Length: 160
Image 1 (cartoon, rainbow, N blue to C red):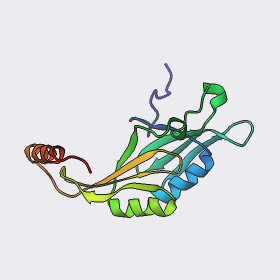
Image 2: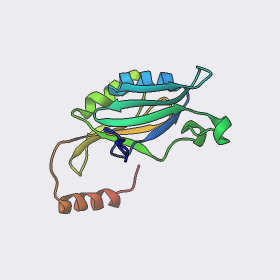
Image 3: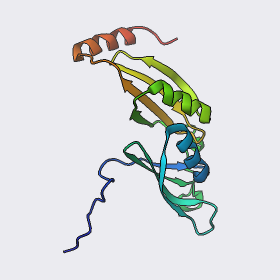
């Protein structure tokens, strides 16, 4: 019987795997915008692209790599698809600070931080590589009934 752990320490949960144009630059962006720490980098044999890289934001691991359309038959970046329907979400100590930090690093703010009916202060950005990121700071506890009533009121209004 092997002593190798089938799930390595630190990799127990869901791990997003992002495809980006220029993974090395993306890592630098994530460091500036979100305080990411690079934990692994595997260059492709040509030395120009990254086959695999890992960053940590807080306690969460994210994998990323450069786009290799020659191996998958097409580009797989959010830009190639006209955007991504998936956001990566984090709870943070100060949502206003992280949104401003991301803006200063080059992200497009698509939702300024604001207090939401479910009890979080919440905001959203799109990074220069097309990935959406949403951030929340929990500011108050809300009952299920209060949240349901507020949701019904919000949906009763037509978006502008």
